[in-house]
Length: 456
Image (cartoon, rainbow, N blue to C red; front, side, top):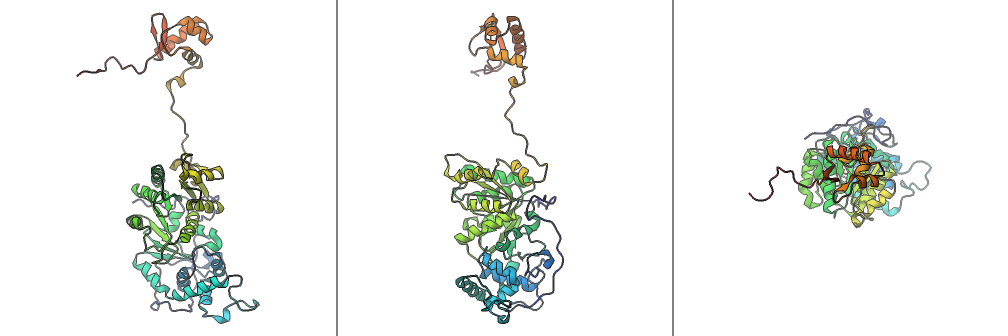
């Protein structure tokens, strides 16, 4: 397999894409719950940078084992994309947020001057109660980290060298962390990635188009990102794999839980040749809301999103709109105007989305300056190369039967002598032929004399 590298750094017009090198992290602290770890055991094989790599306050850096463990525990306590949780995570840090949920630091439950001591003012009590209940049940994150390690994967958190910085554009909806399986570097791959999304119940046209686009992108060194669902997603993944290229599946469940079940073999193959990524810890199941929230990660991770067949209420349009809000490129592949499966795409194209039909046009939009798609034009016909005067005479020759030169001259509005000169020129080029005193168009469908016709 050819593994694409990060390539040249992205241009400044692509939000969130950077290639900066982070620094080193602080010494680990202590967590207010039992981690289930042996003393001195680190639960990640990819040590990361420190707080300088993350501009958000309250984030203590990936080199802290406590920070990683706290985020692993929070991934079970908090639903993906919960902006309320993201706000408190930004304020308290992962360790402080989790301590307050577990009520292990009552003296620090609220900053000084905040009245009744509520650590989460402005967040509904039912939401906080749900966080506390799930956090108490998830007080052994070491088991999840051991599970992902046994699968050959890893748990990435903001500040890790492999963490894709473009996810920071999601602000408080940024993932707590990413559970990853596969041999490649997620950050390097994300720098040259394009999302291909669309309908699950797609048409043969949509499946063929998705596979063709994915193959073309993979051959040009681009990473194809999708959701591993039936229909367009599966066709996109298969197209990239068939070309020996790179593909990333972003799941709405645990990375050890293939979904849909019918794509278990496909997801296993992606794990070997590409990357399987998810926000949810091992053994987590998908829900309709998690599919929708997963789409924001696909949009933020890639440089552009292409929608291939989508109805008006398709989840693929959620991905496209998220990409537009994040300043990413949004593209659509048109379909028949009579197809309801293309109605959502056409609505996108009536807005700010760009119409694309092949991989070259996608790369022209998301690639580096100067990567232009080849010019499109129809075939050049022999008569297109004629001089204007000769082409004018050719248009005056009737389609049926030999016609005298004088009649052709009258139809063309020229003199008989000029007409005859042009007719001989056209005759030498094979456009007309002479029959007695008349001229007619060459019958190009007549077989050549040396072609055997009929018989044996």
